[in-house]
Length: 531
Image 1 (cartoon, rainbow, N blue to C red):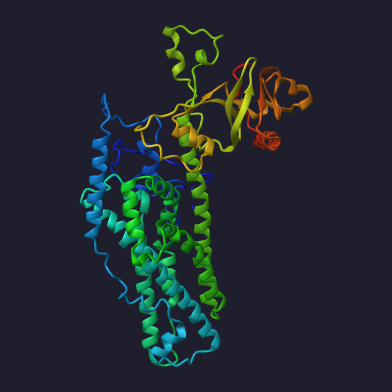
Image 2: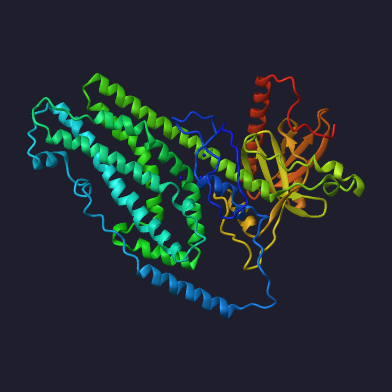
């Protein structure tokens, strides 16, 4: 599958309502739209997911606190909700669409269609092979629309809408789960209808001079909304799967999900398997177009088909970059929430700042230093820091321009707290567990610029007496090559130690090369304040 882009910029405009539905301005550049990179047109989905207050660790919902618990009452309420939900589900009737005209065609071969309409095979063999490739594109689109998009829409999405009309599962966000499924279904249906109309015109025509005008159909839709609607859906896919996993933990949603997945039209497919289908479909379009191109003999047709194939492949490449960008954007938003930057006087007791002067330093806090548009996270992980009288659990973040050392703080949350199911899937298991426990990472010292960082291996012979294994040393030097800080770190395994040392050396080398080629007259970023 979380749509998401390496060098794009994003603007966020978000109202403060918890589930306020509106058009967002966070959008990714889509092919065919005259907008700047990053100016995406996603409806409530990805953008509202990124800005959702429920995702911010410091935005726990305020709940009334009772001096005593009413477990018996809560249990009865849950039983009543489950009973109401099951009763509501028992009244739902899913429309049977097996009589759809495309349903009878999706499993037929091109030869069977011609025989049924008594169309004589008067065309040359090469042209007949081309027609078979065209028919394969059409029938596969039929299967995609009927067995996947329509099932998602009729069985899952419409059922959820029905339940919400009767005040069940009201807090489940339909967009976050299904994105622009409605648009996707309409676009696919329009493609099929136009395609089938062209096929019928060819079959019902008389004379050997007639030909199937499929090129205009393919050009219209592949240069239209077909790829763009799939891009928007795919951008939301990672978030949708993540959201689905958090909903599975709920009893009421489990009842709804079990009822839907048992329906005959699902053909034993689960919701997670159906949600991924549009991604697979988008990546299959180039192969289907290439098959038609290989079997075409007309030069103009081959040029058009090749350009369409290239356009879809470019859309897929753009999407891959956007997915990576969005995934990185989500991750950095979480890092901004869990990484705590203590003020100077708390970080080092040597610095005394009177209360009346502390306001001077507030505007210089480094809260916004973590920005996905400025830097990339290369490596991260849990290590142990050896101090004079103790060992301290630390978590290191290696960015492409500096290293950040933080100490981890675990804070077990009490049951009944805020929703702990919403954790960014791209975070490491250690950080996910920390977030669920309400923990944080407090910055231990100032960021270490990579051009000021020295990593040295520690021989086990010199350090084993202190009970350290797999140890290495980090030195922070100022611009005059004076060591202003040193960190003796221990990895869990020798392999982890070697990985950390290799990653730091590689990042340092790349940073210096990038700086040398840039030849900027300005000073290096993240300059040490202690010179």
